[in-house]
Length: 198
Image 1 (tube, rainbow, N blue to C red):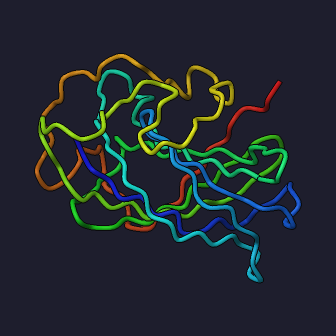
Image 2: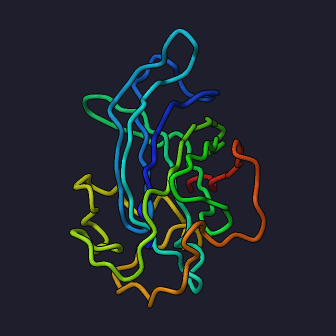
């Protein structure tokens, strides 16, 4: 089990939606869900957040889709909200080192809209079998941070699989880093395309 600090720095390259709208970002990992504050586009044509959140991550060798960290850009108003883009990071393919921040830029698109969400991910603790105040995989609909989850129809089953079943037994994780097939540079950009809504 890994404790991660995830900082949502900003969102840039927003296209396909009016920049006069207010925006927020949802971050989801293994049933946990958080939302940033609502913010506006600044003079640099990006939306600044600078908010930090903490997640618990259990690498899953058997259900690889559960290793995805999803980020969603949403527009918000008084009476309605709408998803702009969705992107994700394959956590099990990253080479994280405890205590070392890693910057990533997640490029997502949906329905001819696109954006780039900039994150900083820092593993702060590698624990084996230590009980937590919050469960690592909470029941779907009851996120750890108390932020309501959006309807899961946003993702087809192959992409997003919230699961209320208990997590599988933990497998050994190196004390210094998460297992990864190959390391990447510290600054990385990832592209993800969500299917169009019917």
